[in-house]
Length: 390
Image (cartoon, rainbow, N blue to C red):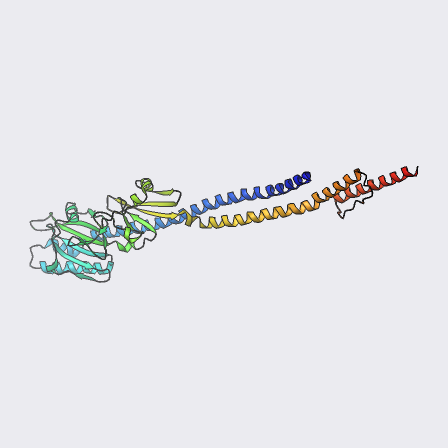
């Protein structure tokens, strides 16, 4: 019967709607909330990590700036500059070298500590491999007058500090292997006696072993103002600038749109369809430039738990559909089928088949209706019997 098929369909549809609509609404809301929560949590985690790294780098470099000023004002340095004509100049130079040596051994963050005179000639040089420090003998000292760091720092007034770019160290014009990333801090010193009193006597310069703080950076890219990678990314992408390895590997070319939104801003978060970028500007103490720490996290990684939730939700939804259909089938068997059977019996009675007994085991309203029909059928049988007797 089409009528009852329509009833069954409507019952099943009703149960599906009642079950699915709340489940879908709750599922989409939970997906939205969990996605935003995970993104916010990841942002806060990366922001805190970047903040910690930023503070660590700036503190480290600030101490390097203080160190070079301390060395320029040390007692052995002052005695050497005050006694340029004395017979004990050699002893004063040895005292200065020993002072630099002790300082290098104690700090363990410098590849070199040097004193260069006003002509760029190395007077005292301490080299270190971060484990051992040693004084370079006189015959191996070099003239660095043509180096950019000397030309820039010798122009400074006493008390000011020159900070070089962070780059790979070179020896005899070639990038040293294994690579040694360095940043140089330099300040001028002046003669304090004799005919040259008050004149610039050269520079104190330290080659900071930048690997001390670069090695702490993992999975977060440190890039310079030109977008070249210095840490936190595959090694073959680092030091792509023309003054280093000239590989041209660059954040700007890897992330053209994102880089335009990062440079010039202090910090922030940028999302695209594939990744989340959290960045912060690093102020290099004493320098006129800055670096950027950039954390990139894939949306797939961040939202992995959301995808797990989506799978779980899909299974729950399928289970809900199954339960809804099962309930619809039970309701159909308890309501629709008895009504259909009762209707069929009533049609037979209406066609004169009044001897067919209407029977049901239902104890509820359907059973009560069936019993009423049965009483009506019995009354009709008795009425027909009386008519026959007349």
